[in-house]
Each structure stands twice: as structure tokens, then as C-alpha cells.
Length: 345
Image (cartoon, rainbow, N blue to C red; front, side):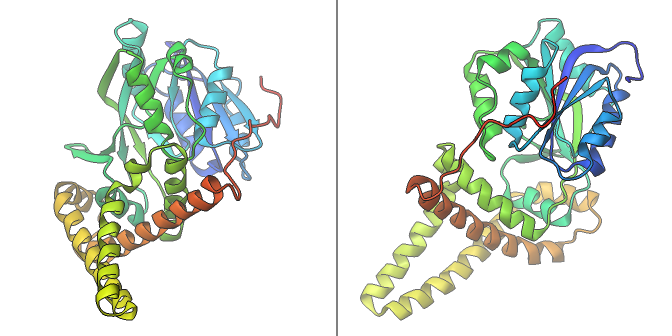
């Protein structure tokens, strides 16, 4: 149960999949908030570990809804459907929360000064691979005096439940769902405020292999979401120029020379883009090097070109997955309604 009697009339929604190792820490952070939530709804999206058992240890304050499978957006929708309070807030299972965060997010809504409050989600810990990816490749991370944070996730926010329902909830895609949802909130005319002191932390443990799989999946789902430029805009430009040079050399000399030219140009393209990433994100890199002692300039110079190449290849594979499986219709992605595995309390 919450450590304080001054509970907030808020339902916290947590989609979780195989979060046995981290979920208990998040629930403890919620329990000892300056003003804890009246309830937490954990939506176990088909975990194969002890995620549900960890959450049930906090019953009846924490309610557990188990489904057969669900992407995070679907799980959030389920949680909101079973929420008991008029304000909902969101976190993911591998996050941590500062003690004042929920209070700062919810009090402006309770006093009717806002309909939606966005906190800040900082990177803390995480694998070296993800730190390189986040600080250099991704464009949705920025730095301030406290560290590096993401802009703007659905996690680490609170809103009126009626607003969530009004905009149709989160779409079911595995990628771009935060972006699509946030645009819908902004178009709704809702009063949105930023709460920089509503701080949460994220510790993503991602390997190079896992990053490759995620990038491929996310690229496909961004296209399914109907947002082809958000993920691929620069890649279209880079690789259109590369293909043009291959065609010109092939037509003027030979296709063998054209392919060889393309290979050399691709290596040069990766090198040029890596240099640009390092220069453009130099402020964030200094933050990462100061915080993450295992990182070094030598590691970055080695990993940035490698991850740039890996994410390019994974993105194009995701493009062809979408083209063949979804657009042509060989095996289109489907979003069946998640089925309850246990009765929802």
C-alpha cells in the first residue's frame, strides 16, 4: 500500500512484458511518492516470467490485468478501460520515478489548470550500445544540465481520462504510437503544460542484435502508421543519390564498376554521416561521456559508423517487410484485440 495517506485520485497505467527484474523497483517508487496514486493498473502483455507475480505482491493497491499479447499502445488502452479514476498517468516497466513526479504532473490537472501534463524522461544507466544510439543516431533526445532526456514520450505524463478517450487512445502500432497519440492530443485543443521537475529515468538494456531487430520492426511499423518520411526522409535522400551514381557509372562504363563504385560510396556515406552525427550531437556526447564512464571517444569512433550501418540495413529490411508483407499483402501485420487470460478485477 502507499506510504502516504495523501493519495492522488489517479490511476497509473503500466504496460509490462517480461519486466520481472525492474517492475518491483518502479512500484516501490510509486508507493513512496510525495502523493502516491490511488491505484496502479499493470497490464501484463503476455509475459513468460514472473511479472504478474511481482505486481500481485502489491495487491489490492496494484491491480493486474493479464492478456495473451499486446503492443504497448494496446496495453495502455486496456489499462485506461479498467481505470477507476478520472486522471490517468503512464510509465513503462523499466523506468524509475523521482518522489515529487506524480504530484507535479497531477496537481495542475486536479486544479483545472491543464488537461495534459508532460514530465521529462531521462536516460539513466542503460547499455553502452543504447547510449551511443540515443546520443548520436536518434533525433528525439536532447540534453540539459540534468542529463539526456527523450522528447516527448507517452510515459511520464498524466492527463484527464476523458481526453485519452476523446483522441481515441493509443494506436496499436509497435512504433510511432507515441508520436501519433501526441499529435492527436495537440490537435484536440487540450491545455498542455510541461513539468520539467516531474522527472523519471529510463534504463534500456539493448544489445546490438536487439537494436537491429527493434530498428527493423520500428521501420516497418512507422510505414504501417502512414508516416513514411518521419523514419526514412534522410535515408531516401542519401540512398537515392547513391543509386543514381551506381546507375550513371553502370550506364557509362559497366555494371561491375557501378556496383563497386556504389560499395565505396556507401562506405564513404556511412563515414560522412557518422562524422556529422558526432559533430551535431557533441554537446549531448559530452554529457554522456561525463555520466557513462564506460564510454570513450575511441568507443564512439568505432561504434557510431557500425551502428549507423546496422540501423540503415535494418531500416531498409523493415521497408521491404512493409512493402512485401503489408503493401503487397503476403502476411500483413494484424492487431487482434488482446484476450484476457484472467478475469479483470
